[in-house]
Length: 273
Ligand SMILES: C[S@@+](CC[C@H](N)C(=O)[O-])C[C@H]1O[C@@H](n2cnc3c(N)ncnc32)[C@H](O)[C@@H]1O
Image (tube, rainbow, N blue to C red):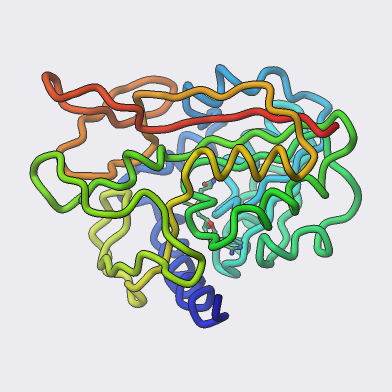
């Protein structure tokens, strides 16, 4: 993949980081977080178990709120993201809260060189691997960060749901079930997913749909043993305008009443052999 695609994505995420850290629409629950709240959603809260005392690498940590929530649960965390603006925002939040987390700027594919030592957990959630062309390379990086016995936690939008055309007012498949590394889905969105109305200066992005089989096989081939694979009827962001909010620990989005039930997200846990 050409570095240009990463660079265009990075510029877009810099713009979004600026918008998200202002949190004018409240989607990141920034003030609640600063007041001491734990912002993890119900799914990851129910699945990750007790993380106190664990050393965690949070890949694609964005503005670091979830990283800091893991630290608030007693973990020692390192967050990595390639957006300098996201990392700068994360560092400011760390300084304001004093929680046990560091933030490193860089491409996730370089994480093994950028992060010191081995981790008990690699944590990757909500809109991460779709920005990467090669899921096998990603799984190799994640495995290389883990201690023997350490675990990967991945929670993502479901690839079958991501095939939908989010601009249609009904269920319409708009995209193939997978795309090659050199054939990303290139889209242009002038606003971000939080409901903020601020315009994004670099609206073009490139992303990839990775089938669950590709992800699971990549994880197994990287030397991890799959322990859990779950599918969920809730998503962390409003993928399409017709999705309906539901409250929980933190707001999530579901299909409207009477529409077909679908898996909107999936999660896996895998342990390093
Ligand atoms: C939707 S956010 C992930 C949300 C995140 N899990 C959280 O805790 O808020 C996607 C993040 O991936 C980052 N990203 C995208 N491609 C990347 C890459 N190749 N290397 C590192 N970070 C990347 C973006 O900068 C952005 O912060």
